[in-house]
Amino acid sequence: MEYRYSLRMKVRDYECDLQGIVNNANYQHYTEHTRHEFILEQGISFADLHQRGIDAVVARITMSFKTPLRSGDEFLSCLNVTKEGPRYVFHQDIYRLPDHQLSLRATVDIACVVNGKLVMGVPELDALL
Image 1 (tube, rainbow, N blue to C red):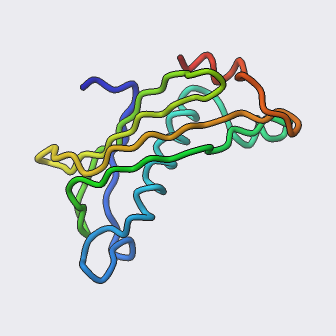
Image 2 (image 1 turned 60 degrees about the horizontal axis):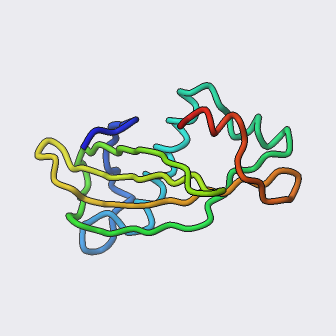
Image 3 (image 1 turned 135 degrees about the horizontal axis):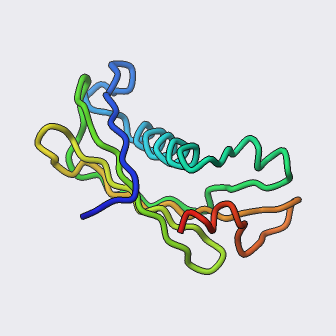
């Protein structure tokens, strides 16, 4: 699959649980970091949007865990983004390197709130499409 954006990262020791694999909650951190880096590369800052009363908030996350990552593993966190009604939908996959084994498949729905009210979208984020 081709992706709009990808980010290479590495598992740190403290992200693993007693079984020696990445704790499930850390995958959410990985996907969030990837979205934020993607947005920054497009010249958009969540902090700047917030200062203007625009907040992009997570409305729903679906995660399917496939192959566990372990301490020291390098991985590629990839994404595509679409728009479905008022939601920006980030389709995110994580692949273990160097074998490109699928580790996680996630869908993250983002909604935009402007001055406390749900809106159909904002021009800055619409430009990502």
